[in-house]
Image 1 (cartoon, rainbow, N blue to C red):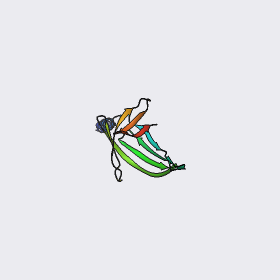
Image 2 (cartoon, one colour; image 1 turned 90 degrees about the vertical axis):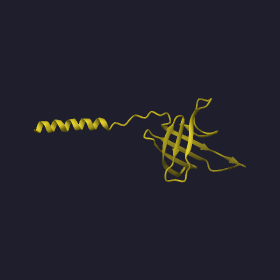
Image 3 (tube, rainbow, N blue to C red; image 1 turned 90 degrees about the horizontal axis):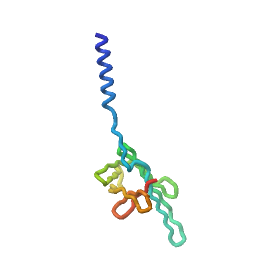
Image 4 (tube, helix red, strand yellow; image 1 turned 30 degrees about the vertical axis):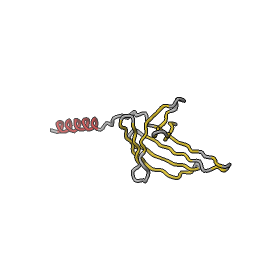
Amino acid sequence: MKRLLSLLALVMLVLSANCTRIAENNDPIIGIWSKTDNTVANKSSEPSSLQEWIFNDAYLGRYHKYIDKKLEFKTDFKWSRDGDVYIISYPGTDLTDDIVTMENTSDGITVLQETEEILAIRE
């Protein structure tokens, strides 16, 4: 009887281990994307800002906003893909969802394009 229970426990362990595998996500958006804004007006330099999106394979990520190299804001985000369109949402914040497509420029740079405006460039 002990052998039967041991065998049954072993079979249950093997079956449960096989059921918990997570599907691999190789989406091309995974990685670090950024946008830099540098403005100069009337010989006085305004603060430069850097926005950074870090996409991971669990359809989540982290957003950072730096002004003059000082962290001003950070939050987590969720992302999803519907065909060629990516939707980036920022739950718990007042930020609006970003709806973007991934484009390659003539310079060979990959960008996230929001209508006619570039949201971010792959690092």
